[in-house]
Amino acid sequence: MMTVTRGDIGKEIADDYSKNTGIRIVGYFGGAQRNMITSTKAINSIDNLSGVKMCTWEWDVMLNWWKSLGAIGSVVSFPEVYTALQTGVVDGAENEFTTFTVARWAEVAKNIALTQHNITVRPLVISEKSLAKLPADLQQAVKDAALEAADFDVKLEGELDEKNMAKLKSDYGVNFTEPDKGPFIERSVAILKAFANEKGITDLLDKILAASK
Image (tube, rainbow, N blue to C red):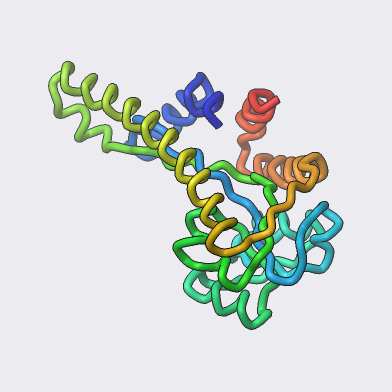
């Protein structure tokens, strides 16, 4: 995530976004990891996801992703996830450790698989028109401050992940598993490539995948 967002790829994305929207990405916040939480059984390998109903939102990419992993994507609105886990409407969900604690999903789902299948990226943006109204020195000050704030946030989110992981273990009695990520990556890449091909951004995806190795 840091290699992509802090390097040439992040700049390319920012330039393209600015060209198409008039909005400038001045920094990339994020860094929080997303993992899988389940109520019915622990996920020790990708095979354990076979037939498991996993909460998702209504987007073909997510529904196809769950299907590629052997699970069944079930569309549930965010405010209803707790009840859906509690009543067995779904067997699991995916999100950040913060959500597992703040939304209290860990009260009704006691298994977390450390898949780290997504590292959250939160772009910090500003209107190009608003930025252009500032004197050159203040434009640079805004850009410098944005980069400093982004680095601070990434560090903070990493610390928060560690804090919430400990809380999930001590306060909620969650069981953590570490399935082999290889099969997850292989099947996820296939979904990413299909999406990139549909949107005409295969070159960008290839650069991101190369940077992640």
